[in-house]
Length: 377
Image 1 (cartoon, helix red, strand yellow):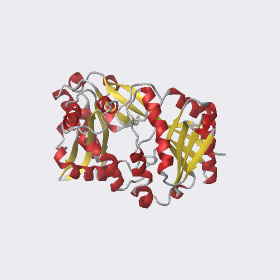
Image 2 (cartoon, helix red, strand yellow; image 1 turned 135 degrees about the vertical axis):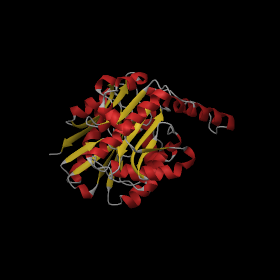
Image 3 (cartoon, helix red, strand yellow; image 1 turned 30 degrees about the vertical axis):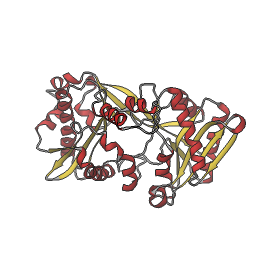
Image 4 (tube, rainbow, N blue to C red; image 1 turned 180 degrees about the horizontal axis):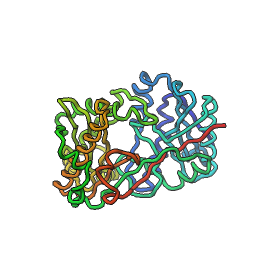
């Protein structure tokens, strides 16, 4: 076994670092969610060069037999403004006990070097990029990290405990939900208030991206592990996704011309992007590109409600309830109108206000995601 490590951008190292992720996703038959460009945009982009220039990181890659086969990898991060904590992300490993032991030893050595008392994760550099470990074997969605059962088991064996959990909820019978919610006061509150809707349209993507950036930074600022991200990095991460947003199920909530809430939904494109990845077309021609575009535009398989929130302006309890009620009642009406058969509310905390418009009888937990931590002695 050999341990390779870097603490600054190295293209050759991170090319090998990406190999492990690609191989594991290919073996599982999944859509690969990571490229060397994705890593470069974060670790060699404006986020770390200017916005987070005081943050340090160390990337570890464990090589197996003959020092040729990547077996395990991770990146550990430390921000001096949070002196007592370090966090890890980009965690991947094969079921190889020796490699896993070396990997976790490296992680904890990093934490000790930084003189921190706690290490937690996974967080891929920032929560707006990707974070949390999926801890059940339900089918994954677009941009979800794909982990198998032994990840959770190994983390627990190494002394890591669950810190917080989130859930994705599947609606049981979307077409009948409005009929079942006639007496739900949160649903009715949303239907009867005077807040305005502003739907997304692809030809105004630049405008929406700036609005979403401002709303995301406000809405998520109270979350644990929140760290603001610069607009240039946000644009690289979310810019390409703006064209996947469903314009009929994504909207802003407005009051007196001011944006105070948002809902972002897409139809899961994983199946079609995986089809594209498995093709041997190196330079897609016009016909191929049109076929892929049609597959994505006409896709109606799974509606994923990816982001729901409100701005800091809507802090009063009554206005907050009206915002979430408006989002919930609008979504339910749109789901019924477009006859969408499979709907998921993604990555919600147990006390998420949007769940008040959808009682437990109308939904079930589809997936669970967890952050793990360990106290360093």
